[in-house]
Image (cartoon, rainbow, N blue to C red):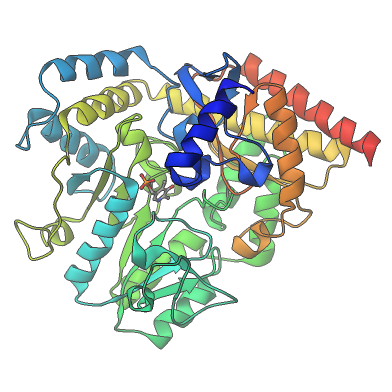
Length: 464
Ligand SMILES: *Cc1c(COP(=O)(O)O)cnc(C)c1O
């Protein structure tokens, strides 16, 4: 028995499923989780001393790679000043100034302790501001585990939410409406049915919790065009442009959400817990050129510490207590050690914008190359990507929403996952998660991974 297996067995006796978050379980890929002892740069090492090239990156925060020395030093320094005061600090002011100074349309921001909390609070603020109750979310988008957002949407567009989890009372989700990602008509229908009742539309500007599903539309086409001129692989993202041409004409999905929200007086919330400070320093708003009213952040802004934030237009944020009537609080919110970690990481990203250029180019090349390999070997897969986020779906159908994502053959993903793990590549233990590239992944390491992918498909070709 390996040390990982031994520890996992102990964990299962005292922690539900042996994990503190279900995404860490390896059940859907038929393995036991590797218990991680340490991580540096692009690599993680488990309790048995096995070293893996990591493509999870703590699910997004580690954009500079693990154990960045500047982040580590900032944390150690902050620890020496005391772990928490439950009072105002300079670091949280600096953090708020940094976020407001870089993310478009964020005049004010409130720090919280997780992405879940950020989204839950942003929705409350939007409801307080509009005096309306209903919210629209998209099937396949994840916004944390708060009651109102754990909604699955059955078939097609629903008018009333059905709880996706036991323990969520029907009442908590009755105001959650579900729409189809990349389908503006499904949102328009909801607005037509409830013109004065929808407080907010919340969206992942790049779907990254059903695998990776970029928003279709104008911007996809223009970014595909620039990709074609820049990239070695002229057809990288081209299928998205084709898809955009076929499925949708003007406006793009995000642009369309913007105009619907403006027309009906609803708040547009970009849940940027993954995309914030990943697509670029201005997040998805800057990347796609679409304005949101409220933005939620997490993951990268904490650099591995438990941090979330929600912010936006002044008139909405001034609804929040103690200025306004929308109550929201947190004993450890703006924790000085967490702020130190986040500030250190964000400062590096701000001072070195070339990190994003290289990261996004690297992503375009890497995911484009996987697509090329799939084409050459005839593997029936779809490769979706946006910047440093990407994923491979084991389906022959283009993936543009939750329904098409679900056509993926998860048994095939599991087989691929096991092959990669046995070759010391650590992928997400689920088909419906992203691969996260970091600044620490070198082109040489990625080229080795591409070689493995090629060998895998060649091998499969022989077997089947
Ligand atoms: C991870 C995630 C959340 C939840 O954040 P937690 O810190 O896990 O609570 C919310 N929204 C999106 C888009 C996420 O990816």
